[in-house]
Length: 256
Ligand SMILES: Cc1cc2nc3c(=O)[nH]c(=O)nc-3n(C[C@H](O)[C@H](O)[C@H](O)COP(=O)(O)O)c2cc1C
Ligand code: SF4
Ligand code: SF4
Image (cartoon, rainbow, N blue to C red; front, side, top):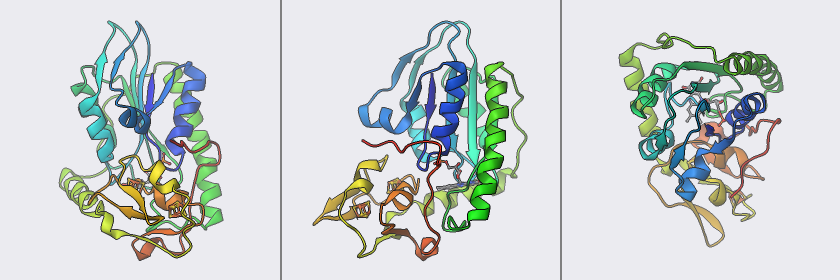
């Protein structure tokens, strides 16, 4: 049983690659949240995995909410792993994973991180083809390495900190302040397809008069609406304008 959260496909692809090797079933956290599926019973020896992106050096808000709701019946014996994807610096996501998964009732056996394309397009330019192809090819071998370790039930210690605690606390505060939906804007290119509304994992977007309106003051800041709009009509601050869109070419977007 592998849970993943993914706005631009990196974690969906990583989870699928792991599941292909371990024969586990994969579940989308967005789908579980949408359908209200929070109770799961693991079979004896069945893996439990969580595969998620790094946001500001830590967990996306939606995953914290999900883990609070999740009710797992653990078997006597199984392998519990965490994978955090990231683009530049994974911060302290590995320690956070150990802390949060232990609260679910089982100390994790391993935490891994995988460097992939950084979809934070307020800074990274998705039109930079050299960056994208280099990051995708390096990710490919990093995924292969992690797949092998997970398939062999390799155990790890709690990962070392990449960021001093004080800096991590500042980064988390910054994340919360950046989650304000008033920072999104829609251009006249919008064709009223409604995809942004359907794919938002926290239902923060509604079409009104055929244009998207952010109906919640805050969201989880996955940037899925920005990256997946078919006509690139959504921006998140002026910094994303001209920085293009990204979706991992090895997988398909989840559509509700
Ligand atoms: C809100 C937000 C914050 C992010 N923060 C970090 C970060 O602190 N460090 C980092 O290396 N990458 C960061 N990223 C990049 C993602 O972790 C990375 O691109 C991830 O692989 C995306 O996964 P996905 O395609 O499954 O959504 C951030 C992305 C977003 C949207
Ligand atoms: S996804 Fe883009 S084109 Fe479709 S409704 Fe949203 S903003 Fe408009
Ligand atoms: S509003 Fe956009 S960035 Fe925020 S959670 Fe929804 S899809 Fe993600």
